[in-house]
Structures are given as C-alpha cells and as structure tokens.
Length: 245
Image (tube, rainbow, N blue to C red):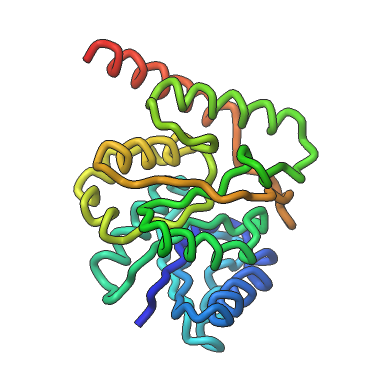
C-alpha cells in the first residue's frame, strides 16, 4: 500500500534523480508516510528510465512509465494520474514534483500534513506567499513567472498566488472526479493553470505552503518561447469565455 504517490515527469534527468528519488522516499518514510515514486519518462536518451529502474530494484518503491517520445509535461502528468487511478489501491494523495531538484522534498511532509489537518484537496508549494521566495538567479524567469501568475489569476478567477507552481499535493479522490476531462488539458506550461482551474470548478479546497524555489541542479530549463505564447493564448481565450458567460 502506498498512501502517497509522487508523479515525476522526466526527460534527460538521470543525474538529478540519482539523489532526488532516494532522498524523497527517505524523507517521507521518516515522517511515517508509505510512499512510491512514479517516474513518467519520455524516452530520455541519457538513460533516465534505466537509472529510475535501478533505484526501484534497490528500494521496491519506484515504478517507471515509459513513453515513446517527448510528449510534454502536461501529458506526462495526465498519463501518470491515470496510471495511479487505474492501477494502484489505497492511495490518498498524488504529488506533482519536478525532477530537476528545484522542488525541495524536505517540505513535502509539511504539505501533506497541511492537507490532512486542514482537509484540503490541493496544497500548492508557493513562491509568492510569506516564507516563499526564489533562489533562481535568472531575472527573466522571475519576470515571466510573475506575469504568468497575474495573467492566470485574471483568466481563471482562482485566488491562489502561485498558479504556475509545479509542486503540489492533490487528494486522489478529487483527481478521480476530473479524470474524464484530463485529456482536454494542454501538454505544456499552461497545464498547471488549467489543472488548478478544473479542480477549482469541481469544488476543490485549495491552499498554499511556502516554497523556496531552487535552481535546477543539472541540465537546462525546458521552458521556451513557444510554451510562453501558448500559455498567454490560453489565458486570454479563457478570460474572454468567462466574461461572456
């Protein structure tokens, strides 16, 4: 039985997950959580899937879902969520976590505890509440993130400070309510805002927990101009849809 499943999309993250996955599992175990990491790998040429499988052999707590190519972050989470819903029993929470080391696993038990005590359906690790901040030095990334969150809040009406955060705890029962609509969501950067909006419309109780966002350990950011344009386009279209209705 795994009470907590951490869904971790990967593409060329072999070096990062060598430390990240064992650390995440250890921290959750130390805080009394039965856990499993589900790696959703997009055929990484650097052998990420193989590294994850080796960790799985050593711990018995890692599963790898292999996909035929680079299909996008959103679709990786959708496939991961569906896999948990269809194949795993007794799961209470599903966690979104990046594989690049920017999401510190040390705060995951606190996020889970907040969800339990406050009976929240979603806990977002937030850079934009008291106690949260960036350690990322790129001013361009900070400006893009701030702008995206302002646009996301205007577009959706969701009162959360960090809609684009990819570090979250989500109650599985709430994901089950929207699983039939997950395939409607986009695969890129906008996925995180779309998912929160869909959960919000379904009645999810949402809160935030402070996140000190760290620079990625190895590799390069996968956020490009095409993703930014797609994000802005979706937000504007959704805003007009809401205003018309």
